[in-house]
Image (cartoon, rainbow, N blue to C red; front, side, top):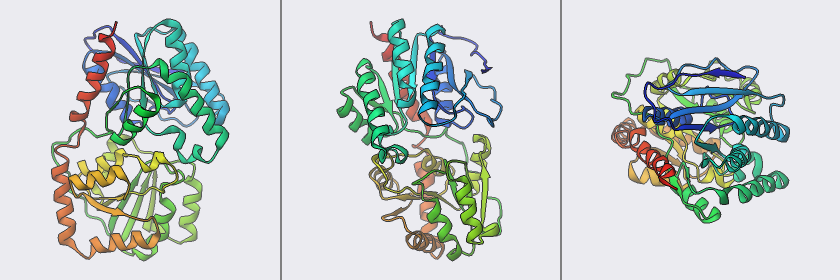
Length: 379
């Protein structure tokens, strides 16, 4: 087990534990949430897992722990992690546990019930509708059963978007608040560094349904464009192999994982950001990805899919292009249209600069703090 901790200078002596199944290094949402609560005087611990190639943790204003697991994925991993997490929570000091998504819910629910502690649920996604689950009936039923068993014991919950909040509130009969996954506000937009070609940016997991194969197929027709792909995932090797088959050479660059601070710098250098999702399940269809808000905060227009949440964003501020279908030709047409119309691109850029004044974490954290205030006002 790896333990890295730093306590805020003053606390309310209200210990909170947040549980995730990632290794903590690149989880910007949890870093913002835990950091915000620590700033308010809570004593916060973020609990994740240690992986074979995990980067060293950096010091933050909240405590961090990683649990070592023998299994790395699949059913055995989730069972092992929840077992280890449960025994940790059985003896740790805390007043409340926040379980992030269904994959950490069993441990948090059982431990807080046994110890009569408070509990909160944070749904980052529609877990039973992600592509990795939605077409596996047995796995989907297991996660659905976990939700039906555990969530009736919860009174406080939040999620990342209005439509998911509405769905979850009706499905689980508990109110879900909306804490959108927005970045910290930056004072200025960084000037773009000169590059030999315009940069198309993808940041996030390299997993199924993210439109990455489509992006690579489109690149040969976008001769003066370079794709920067930042992240890793299940498709890492397959995408690199596809790039070789297409002989893309220097037209695509795989950066791997980058710390949030470096990611922010690279985002600012992009000409266009890509948020390409296949409609492979309701989790993607109702998603509201942080990469969209990160790009807007950097003043970079975004290509989003014409899904409900993104349609609503574009109706508020026209920040880029909505794709009605995810095909190489549709993507090529959208990108070339902006390339050939600099005036339209500048309008989108200016719209991003206006949107960034409202789409940032300082607005969202108010909902988060009210939720946690309500948790401890209860008898």
